[in-house]
Amino acid sequence: MAKIEREDNGKKGRFIIYENNEEAGEMTFTWAGKEKFIIDHTGVEEKYGGQGFAKQLVMAGVEYARENDLKIIPLCPYAKRRFEKDESIKDVLA
Image 1 (tube, rainbow, N blue to C red):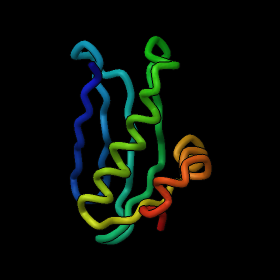
Image 2: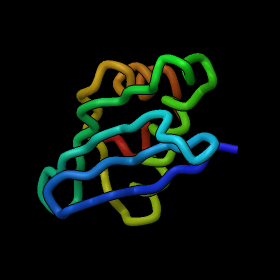
Image 3: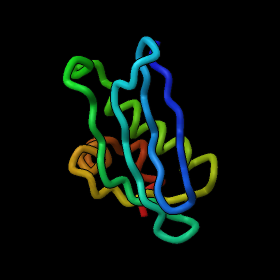
Image 4: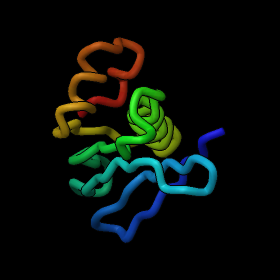
């Protein structure tokens, strides 16, 4: 079962997804003020492709935004497509 962790230094951060204790992918973000963050990159290691990890990373960001009353600016092409396709997460769009 994949596990997701969040790292954040106050300016930038990332959500990392692990499979079998190995880093399988990440979604990086940059803070835009105190109430918004920009998703600037989502990437999954080739051997873990096609398992829905990129979607799980974006959804982890959405959950984090909801829990902390934040908004997301999805600049990364993958995250942007997810937000365009999924009506249920548009509440956190900046």
